[in-house]
Image (cartoon, rainbow, N blue to C red; front, side):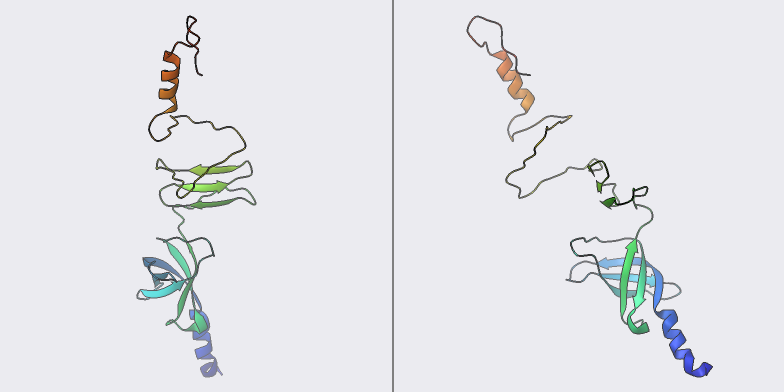
Length: 168
């Protein structure tokens, strides 16, 4: 009986493994990752990702061998404990990277962190909002800052003989 069940038991043991990612190939329609499984040589696996979200990981993976065959590996979950955002409240969602950039949907509102890098809205002909805009730095229109426009306006004498009208 043991001889009959031995191949089945071996395939079951090989079905799911933990591994460490070595490389990622993001050049094709389905990302491939090279992963070293416990005690084995590096092997390539397809990496399925959630629709609408993509990343090039540098971390750990849970890998399954389809049908128990190590020749057909699929990375089903990838994470990197060094950079994972922790302490989220129930229902909150975040995307993040290894530089500290993140978009966090909190219970109080959306928090975007640029980690000191620029934030760009590209191919966006119009930005609208139904509330106030508050900035700590300058507001630019491409050629001048809002402060430069205020300085020009405030330097003019409005109304002829009276004091300058200030633009605040």
